[in-house]
Image 1 (tube, rainbow, N blue to C red):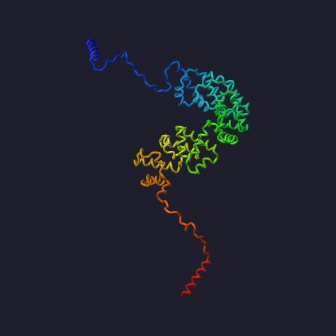
Image 2: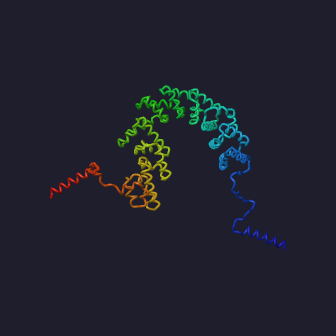
Image 3: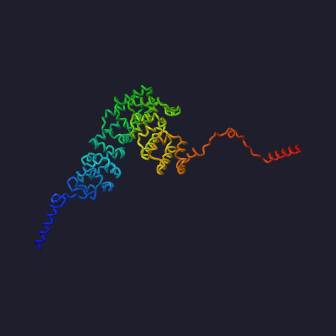
Length: 460
């Protein structure tokens, strides 16, 4: 019986293998798919990841958010090549520079390679010197990032600090320089001294110069021959006196961000504006130099959002009111255009008037009305572009999109008065020159009454 069952089983298996329409399965060649790892910390156990658990516990111990540890170690697998004791030593050195947990987390997130012990070991001897200086925590963070990126040490940092203090900068000013322009530690001391000497030669007082460096430390990076001299020669060629330029420089050191030839281009554009006299007077109210610089700032603002240099000038030439408005106002309008209205930045080239109208009184109410009509199916997306939203006058927009839909009256707000209760005629002259009223006393009333009685008696 057992032999019979074995024969039947063997025969059935062979029949299935050779006569089945499906491809035979050979279990020796099957490749099983590895199940997905349900735990983010369960990396394959190899030499590169053997310190994973220890690193995770260590980071959590020093205040790193536990929810971010898996993603952090996944992105920075090179950290797993460092031994856990050395990583802990690096963290202790960083904490000795600044004990704040937020400082450690921010530094490790922005520059995780600072956890390499061979790098941080160089700073161990300078902990007390850093604490004794006036360098802020932000400056320490930026300096460590630059030093790690360019393989610099604390000797390079304090050599630069001594150079800046030797020029007369205070400890607070040196901290501001390292905070705003940490790459200064890579510069040659001779270049820094030449820049300072140039500003002193053109007549800037030493106190004003230190203020400029404090507010805009990047001025130390400008070359004298290839940037500063050509720029000031251009200012002189445009007719601006050196005293006036120095005053503008002290007022806003970012003036030095102008490239040679840029101010000339801005002034040519401003002089070619075709707009109302009042707008042009507002643009040049503080002088031609300031007007050109303000135009440069707004061009830079638009270029930040993706417009080309040519398109930015075109938008501002067509809508010069934007030159008078605050940059923050322009940024709010562009952010609303891109994020809320879901329009492309190039729409400004077709409808530059968008930057010139009031946001609260015109843009926002009209956008809310159009969104309401779209939700009702009363208007299609293709029918309403940015130009169609901004170009119509208030009365025309009311008649087209608000008046036929009573539910849009409240959305449009107080501007519904434009269409409904608009007075047709000006106030008459008889209302303006109305005679003055006087109160009547009892004596006046008695006199009038006696006068009227006398008139009645005469008639009789």
